[in-house]
Structure formats: structure tokens, C-alpha cells
Image (tube, rainbow, N blue to C red):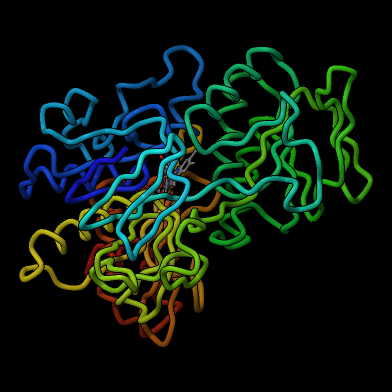
Length: 426
Ligand code: FAD
């Protein structure tokens, strides 16, 4: 049993949706393109899962957040794919790939062949067992990567009104889930080993603003320690979270956000890997010229910083996917991907954006106890990174522009004084 396509996108997440849009804009004939996904639904804007999806009242539900609404473009519903002759092979896991033969084998035993493959398999959530702790299968222990996970969080939240949740991990999944749990009137304790939240990005000063804000919402932080084990009731539900420093926390539910691992396993030994992902060139092409990789799974050259990086952000998934399709369909007109790393988060009524790189010296500006403040990172006399909380569209565009241009910074004290004005003047 088998089918053949000119283009196959493996994975049906954010990158797949934006690639499909780009294919349709540049022209693809009916029957040429197929998307294979183990999720049962058409591609959607994954960031919604930790935000609108978890809200009480009128939560976001499909079809409202199918791609590509995240960038105010057409919403690609299952009907859209049908109308454009793009085959959606959903609920179907690919269990092996042969890049020499240009075939994929699905778990249902079908062989799908391609001329060009775009790998958009994203990443999976790391499990507690990988850190030596058992309990992931308990019914009140939750992860968050897909809709099934989000539905589980919603169900578990509903089963313990005004109960206690322990959030393991202080990254953006932990922070966004904690905010959503609080909005659902669940008491939250956050546990993480670092000295402050969002340790990979935030400075201690930035983190302390958000931690104070969360404290004001009743969130308790237990920092500098990690999960050691769980205690369970006779139904196998977690009742207590025990930390390595001996702290015991009552728990009606646990949400785990301890990082992700790119889904590269189908291609190990067949394609070159780097930074834990599939290495691509500036056209998103892997070490096999018929195979491209985009989104969380791709390690690509970030021209701005002269380095190969793997980014786990939605904007990079959208843009790298579109770039790959441009390179496939219009190779002569497509140059190398020139990407400015961008990441954002929304929590409670707060919202921040970050552009560039958080290396070098940091200069904070604005009112760190108020609602608008930011930071710049300066390396070798150039602006390399910018963070802003509470900015307007124009202000975010200004910090992006100044970072993209690597604006010259002569004096850090002056930069601090100028604050946002520095970027607005660029
Ligand atoms: P994904 O969207 O994960 O898609 C991968 C797809 O491949 C999935 O459909 C998966 O099921 C499928 N797949 C994998 N292996 C196989 C296989 N063998 N066979 C078939 N199908 C397969 N980023 C931000 O910048 N800001 C945010 O606020 C933000 N919030 C987020 C909130 C949540 C809850 C999550 C989980 C992520 C968030 N992100 C955010 C990150 C962003 O969503 C990802 O960077 C983006 O989804 C990556 O897109 P992708 O297409 O590479 O991977």
C-alpha cells in the first residue's frame, strides 16, 4: 500500500501550517502536497494552549486558532486544505524514514513517498522519568505540548476546584501555566532549581519583577531545589510532592514543564545533526538535498550572530517554514534565511517581547516596579538583545529594528538614561 506526493511535510504543527500557506501562495497543484501528523487535528497555533485554551469562561477552542491566525492571515481549517487540494493525513504517526529511497512508513503500514520532504516534527516535552523521578503516568500529573495535554489540564483543574497545584519548572511553560491555574482559582506553588524564574532569558532584576507580580497573585516560589519523589493515594493520584531539600507540598495536581527534546530520532544516522536538532543551511536544506527541516527541530545558521542555533519559538517556526517553501519553489529568488531571534510571552495582563541575544552587558531601563520597563544587552559596543514589558506595537518594532541593526552603543550609562528613547531614535 502506498501513495506518492511531490512534497511531503512531516509533522502537523505550527511550521507545517505556515509552510502550507506559503505553498498555496506560491502555487502548488492539487494532489502535490501532503501533511502527515500524529495529531488528530489540522495545524494550529500551539502557543494558545497555555494561554486562551486554559481560561475559564470562554476558552479558545478549535477551529478558532488554526494556523495562520497568529499572524492575522488566513485561518487554515480542514476545509481550506480540501479546497486547495492539500492532503491532510492526520492521526498518523510516521515510524520510520528512508531518505535514500525517499519514503516514509506510517504506523498504519502505509508507505508514502516524496520528491521533497520538509521535516517539521517539532519537539516533545521532557518527562520526569528522564530525570530519575517516577510518576508521569499518574492521572493528576500533566504536561503541555498538544491539545490532548491541554484537555487533560482542563479536566484535572475542574476535578479540584480551589485545590493546590505544584508547577515543576520555571521556564515559560511553567510561568504561563501557573498564571492560567491562578486565573482558574487554583493555588500554585512553583518549583525550580535556578535562583529565579526564566533563568535562560531573564536577568535577576527582570525575574524579580515577575516573581513579585506572581507573589501578589498568591503564587509561592520554591527555588534552588528540585523534585525528589511523589506520594500517591490508593488510586495512584499524587497527593504530596517531595523536594530534594525535604520540603513537602500538598498537591491536587502537578504540571511539569522541564524542557523539550527535538523529534529527530527518525533521521538519526541519515542526516547531519547539530545542537540537538537537524542541521540545515540558510535555505533550510539538510545534509540531503531533497530534505528540508524547519521549526523547533531545525538547527540553522543565524546570520546576525554568525552561529548555528536551534530556536524553540513560534515566530522562528513560522518564518523558517515559509523560507524553506520559498527556497523549494523559487530557488533563484531566495537568499539565505536572515532571522532575528524573537520570543514573547503573555501572562495575566502582562506581555513582553525579546529580540536578539541575551549576551554581554545588561542595561535595565524604565520603572521596574511599574508596568513598562526593559533591558538591552550590549556586546562589543553593539546592541545585541532587547527586552520590553508592556510596550506598544511601535515600541516593539523599534527595539526589534535597533537590535537587528546592532546599533552602536558608546556609553552604557547614557543608554540607561535614554531607555526606550534609544531604540525609538534608531
Ligand atoms: P510543533 O508545533 O510542535 O509541531 C510538530 C508536529 O509534528 C506535531 O503535530 C507533532 O505531533 C508532529 N509529529 C512529530 N513527530 C511525528 C511523527 N513521527 N509522525 C507524525 N507526526 C509527528 N513560542 C513563543 O515564541 N511564544 C509563546 O508564547 C509560546 N507558547 C507556547 C506554549 C505552549 C503550550 C507550547 C507547547 C509551545 C509554545 N511556544 C511558544 C513554542 C512554539 O509553539 C513552538 O516553537 C512551535 O510550535 C514549533 O513549531 P513546529 O511546527 O516546529 O513544532
